[in-house]
Amino acid sequence: MKCTFDVDTFFGALESKKSALGISWRELADVLEIPDVAVFGRMSRGEAPDIDTVFTLSAWLGSPLERYVRGDIASPDSLAQIIEMIEEALHEDGPEASKSRLCAAHAWLQDARTLAI
Image (tube, rainbow, N blue to C red):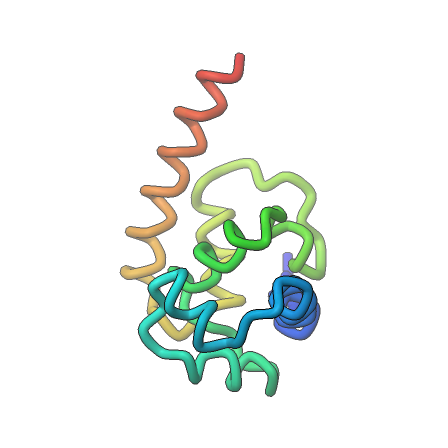
């Protein structure tokens, strides 16, 4: 199963919302506490940011990450599959850093799902 993170579409959504709000990339970085404003320039050239930045920006957009994943994303059956998909798309962090963050995210999602039932 091969999935890719569509950085161009993700960046386009960010740019659209930022423009609608009339704020600069620096202002957005400050508001979201993203220390490296240059991440937006790299994204404009198709480079994926680190996983923490992706989560932060996705939350700001208010849209699910699945919207920006291309390929076969037919409901992964396990945390291991989710980790594998994201590590392939966002390989810069390395497996251990991604795994730690994703385990925390998975636990949060499981709690949220339990509360919603």
